[in-house]
Length: 148
Image 1 (cartoon, rainbow, N blue to C red):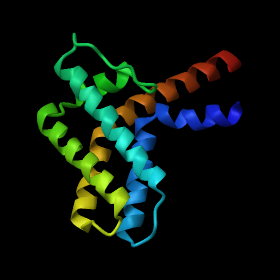
Image 2: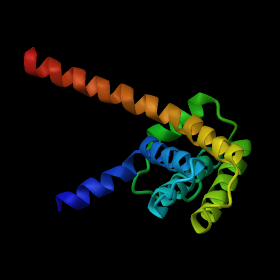
Image 3: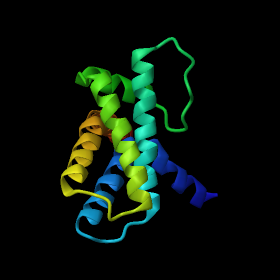
């Protein structure tokens, strides 16, 4: 039971998915073999981002519920001023490219890998900032309750 909870906790953090994907892409760029599971995490992240973009464009539509869905992530993207239409196309391209890369890891260009890495980090950075500030607030509150 604990093992399952630890495995599913990775799904709740898009910044972690982005980090794992960026590291996997860096390894591919250096010519190392990478587990397809790491690239699958990048595909999941792309799906999650596309879902957030859909919710930002049509807030009243039928929403698909994700296991790691967070309203905070949507608000963080909205507040960061991301151009949803242009980023949607870039994320769709990145998803397709990650699928192709999963099948044939030799079909890459370092420039394309760098572009995808920058895209994933740029889109998840606002989410990471919100989560880190919430973590610090919780930690501060726990400290006040224990010592105060």
